[in-house]
Structures are given as C-alpha cells and as structure tokens.
Length: 550
Image (cartoon, rainbow, N blue to C red; front, side, top):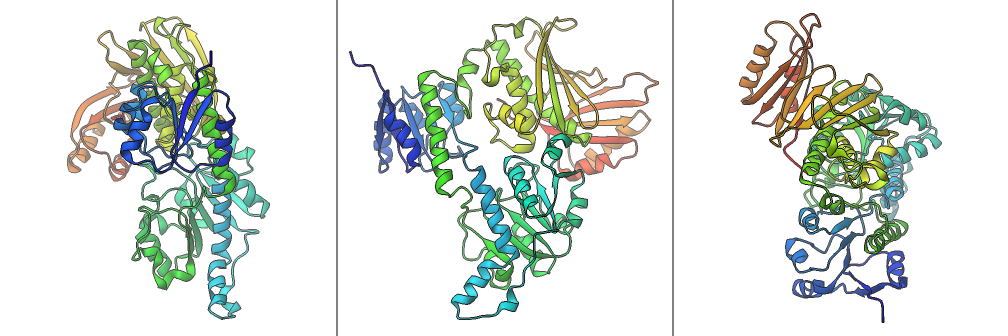
C-alpha cells in the first residue's frame, strides 16, 4: 500500500532552495501555482496539508475555513500580516516564518547606504551620467575614527557593530534592554542616555522594531539632539522617524545626510518629502530592498520549508509564530497562568526600564500543583509559562514580531540566562515567582490566580501588593510623604485621565518608601509620565498597557 503523502501548495515565487527541499521530500506531493484566482485558491485548499507563501497570498479566516486538512502555513520571510494568526491558532494550525534569514542582507544594505551617503556615491554617479566632472562637489567623510551610535543592539545591530569596528570606528550603542555583558562581548560601549549619545555621534543608525515606544522616535525634538552635521540611517522600519521633521533638519543643515530603505507608507508618491530636489544631494533612498539578496531569498525559503516539513512529520521545529500544539494541551487553569505569565513579562521589562537597567538573567519558581511535571514542554525544553513570560518581556522592546518560538532564541541572543525551578506552595495554592538580575539591582514579581479565576499581582520587589494586571496601568515609586497622591491625582485630572482603580503599599512606616499602581481608563502619554516623574518625592513612574492578551 502506498504511504500517504503530505500535499503542500506553493502560491508565490520563493527561493529555489526551499522548493528543492519540498520536491526531494519522498513524503510530499508538491503543487506550485502562482496564478490562482481567489476562487481557485479556496478550491485548491480543500485537500492541502501545508501552504508556502510570501506576502501576496492572504490566509484570512475565509481561506483557513476552506482548508480543513491544513496543518502548517509557511511564510518565506518575516512579516505575517497576511495571515490570520488567531484563526490559525484556534484551528491548531502552526504558522512558521523565517525571521533570521535576511539578517546579513539587511546588515550589508545598511553598510552600503552608510558608505553611499557619506561618500556621496549616488550623486557622483548621476553627475557623470549628466556629462559632468565636478569632483569637488563630492568630498565625503571617512568612517575611520568617527563615532557610530547604533540604536538597537539586536541581531542586525550586533552585525553592524562588528563591521564598523573593522572600519576603525568607535562604536557606541543605545539599547535599554541589552546588558553590559552583551555589549562588552561585542566591544561596544553601551550608553544609557539617548539625547546625550546623540549629541556626540558622527553617524547614527537605527535598528529597532516599530512599536508604541519607537513610533516617531526621531521627532523634531529628538532630531535637535543630534550633533550638528551628523549622518542618520534608517534601514529598520518606516514610522520610526518623522519624515517631515527629518527633511526640515536636512534643509536647515543640522543633518549632513540621511539614508533610508523604509518609509511610513510604501510605495512613495512623487510628492514625498524625501524626493524633494533641494535635498537630493544629501539623501539616499532605496525601495525597501533590505532582504533582496539572492542568498537571503534562498535562506528564508529554505528555513520556511525545513520547518514546514518538521511540523508535518511531527519533529522539533523553530520559528513558529504561534504555538497551538502547546496551548491545546494545557488545562483551562494552565491557560490562565500562560496569559498571566506574558503580562508578568511585560511588567518585568517596564520595571527594568524604570531602573534604567537591562536584564541579565531570569530565575523562575513555580509553586503549586497546576505547574506539575505533566505540563507540556515548549521549545528549548522550557515550560510554556517561561516562554510566554519571555515573549512579554521582549515584546516591549522588540515589538509584536517576537513570537513564542522566537522569544527563547532572542533571549539567548541578548545573553539572558534563564533558569526554572519548582517549590512548595505556601500562602497561595499556585504562584509564579520571578527574579530578574539586572545591571543595577534585582527585580522580583509574583503573580497568582484566585479561586474565582482572577489574575493578581501580589508582589513587586519588597512590596506585597495586590492588583489586577489588566488594561492601562501606571506604576510609581515614591518617598512616603504627605501630598504625593494628591499631586498625582491633580496631574491626572489636568490631562483628562480617569482612575479606574488604585492600589497602594508601603513596606513599613520606618521604610520611608511607598509603591502604587493605578489602573486608568485613558491612554498614558510620554508627556504625562514625564510630569509624574518630575513630581517632588516621586522616584520613578512607568506605564504598561496590558489590554492585549494571548
């Protein structure tokens, strides 16, 4: 009897290396069709076990509904905006992508744009095509001996650091989520104050995700902090820089040059600020080609195909955007602790940010029967709750592209040590305790779920406090003196922010400190946090948005 084969459908042009893997697999029936209409796609999905796409094939709830046998969706690239992750998860379908396949391509494009901008290569090229020979117009700057500031020392930022050190540059980095140990391993000087770092850097290159913290990060005010005559590069994400503000800074002569591969809205229209003729000699623009190398396209195709095969064959795999196999095997109580763990991770990242320190290690203690040894293990043999906590922790700095599968890998890349242990329950039947060692001081958080099924945070550092980790939260630490709460309330009234609940704790009267958590109904702006932090007797204030859930 012939063994049943897995049917895999490829609907877009992907690297040949991935196709070769699928073609040569003895247990795969491969169909390649890049001209399917929507109706034909729905019909073709009826008996498909896996589908390999790029960004041009939508896998919405309609397409997923039409694929009752579908087990895996492969994305030959990073973004998964064209895939309904929630619907796939509900149906137990694994979604895999290839987040590491274009790292070197993006790194090398950044270097290319840096050199092209500083040495005025595109402008010199165009000049010759006009029949000119005006060498004096294209006097550039050497990289050797110049100060480089890398904003975001992740995979790509780390590769940039290595290459720029080879050019003889003095390399600095700003990344509040990277430990000193990680920076030292790259021979990079880690800086804690971004405006100060901008004030002396000759070249600044951006390598952060686009999220609520980084959107319009380079506003007119932040651009003004740049050293006069500095060069700025953005090959990360559109929307991190205020495009009109950058254009004006170039016109005013504050920025000597700007290079970018990404834009807030793509493709560009003819009236885009970066295409203005009066700044053409100081701007290098490329059409989002960071991943466009033959090698990168081959690599992302290979990674996606390898992991699709692993999913179908029931073998270990990497780079799943979701983990339905794990969630499906958890009890209802365990699913609640999974959600709580991700929230604890987000709180941990924000508290580390408050102390101005990156996480170096994480020690997690699980207490209670709900965390028994029969709990399914996730990738890297971590408990699901550990993975969810890492996802929440890293999502604050790296954005939503951090998946469950990628979180442990990204933590390892950042030099974060992780340990798990189990202990006996005491006051609470089940409890998650987390201790984060940072460059400055340890941070402790404990959380539980009540018998009524309510999530609670019951400890932050030495403060045994009780609050529900939901919605928009403001946390602040203060000297325990009269008037602090009243002043905080006054600022919230002035800014139109309503308080939904309030929790306050002080260790003891002689301690001299207090800690408070406010749940509010309205968005918390950076300006509001600045006002709260500037209050007399307030040591620090942070906010965290926990409205999104697993």
